[in-house]
Image (cartoon, rainbow, N blue to C red):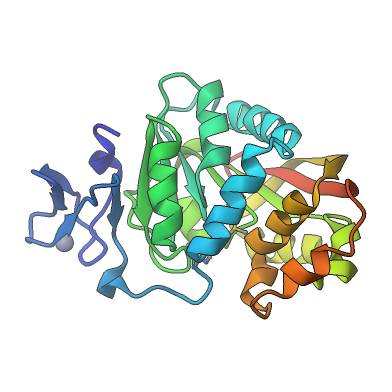
Amino acid sequence: MAGWHTLLACPHCGAGLAETGSALACEAGHSFDVARQGYVNLLPGGASAGTADTPEMVEARMAFLARGHFRTLDDTLADAVAAVVDGTEGCVIDVGAGTGEHLAAVLERLPGRAGLALDISKHAARRAARAHPRIGAVVCDAWGTLPVRDGVAAAVMCVFAPRNAPEFARVLARGGGLVVVTPTPLHLEELVAPLGLVSVDPRKEERLEASLGGHFERRATRVVECRMSLSRADALAAALMGPSAHHMLPGEAESRVADLPEPVAVTLSVSVSMWSIAGAG
Ligand SMILES: C[S@@+](CC[C@H](N)C(=O)[O-])C[C@H]1O[C@@H](n2cnc3c(N)ncnc32)[C@H](O)[C@@H]1O
Ligand SMILES: [Zn+2]
């Protein structure tokens, strides 16, 4: 995406970045190559956390999302982000963006807005860079200082991903807001026991309040709930794209999925919440 470097900050010294050939560099001489796939790695030291999506998880996510099962979620998400950015200039930042599909759906609703896809997985960033012409993709750690300049975002979105409230507040412009998607305990519940998935913490909403409270105030919440009709291949992809994939033995989900009926009815149940910066009125 052209001009994306103006949104970014050097992960070492915090200064702005300029384009120098196929790299981005700050005035102090810290330089970061833009990969030929179109993303930039701004992870200090280049280390990647164990929570990064693996190439297999990224493939599973691409396959599942391509089947359109989350379209209802994307519609609600795009409505929420469009409402949040209304009247505020700035880009849309997706933290833990994965393959960038949700951000691409949101940008389709917002002509002319730039999007930044941040993820610790370079495999995910590679995909996100290609998901939409207005997406710039950056490898970074959401738990650290985001390599993004203060106040450049009209919206931050966070879909099933790590929430770093003080950093979200810092990168948001005055008047901007946060949109968070979290699973409810009913999400994919029909697959939990048969495929050995990690179940959703019943206190997820409390944890959401605890993680954002102090920095953000909740403005609205919508629950998106529907039944998906999944093939065994879809159900397998749903298992392999989520956090449970980090805990499974090789081949475990593949062998368990054979016992499912086909198609299998599976619940999609997520909460889409909109937050404004605390004290912003
Ligand atoms: C469950 S996936 C959700 C991806 C995407 N938001 C979606 O819904 O399709 C969680 C994402 O968070 C990323 N992630 C995990 N830990 C992270 C961290 N510390 N910083 C940035 N991204 C992280 C993973 O690589 C993965 O892409
Ligand atoms: Zn620097």
